[in-house]
View 1 (cartoon, one colour):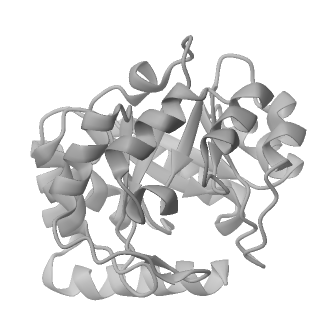
View 2 (cartoon, helix red, strand yellow):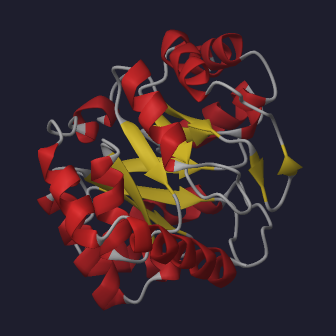
View 3 (cartoon, helix red, strand yellow):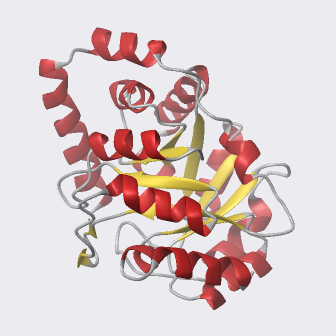
Length: 257
């Protein structure tokens, strides 16, 4: 599944490149105002931080919410106390777009993450051209050389890489490239099974000084508290926020951890 999602995202980027060549995207990326320092927004604090996700659908759950106005959704997230906003820009299975990211970025004052299946420099430049502050890099989808290259490019463009892992080996690979924002996704992207305890088993391998993010399997305040107790500095939440009252849900999540 992960390989298919990544291949599809790269193919779609190649199609976009036919009408918007890399040189043009690079120029637009370099012309943007500087990205926000996401590490400062997500740094360890007395209270857990939440990255709230704009997410219409997923391969595991199907359609979740129409979200006709992603900017409004993001403003509600910020109102509810989110420290950053994640925007799914993958179009085939998640029904997102770069236009969603651009709309969200224009509507909020907190950092915005491009969450997609990034595997080419073109996609990284696209993210900055759309004014993303963070870019997701999934270790399982990239060999170590490409992971290091994309990580360096994200940093060079002034953004923050969120390096997502699913195993001890992947956490070690993230450490090897100097990742300072490391996520552990409870969802196995090859089987889509969930393991809420995976973060707790892997957290000790995350380098000292890195911001630790727990991803997926968050449906109730107890889930956020569980991750916080295991050492998470931030928790990424999607489905629970798009299927209910986002402001009330966020306040409950933050109040419980």
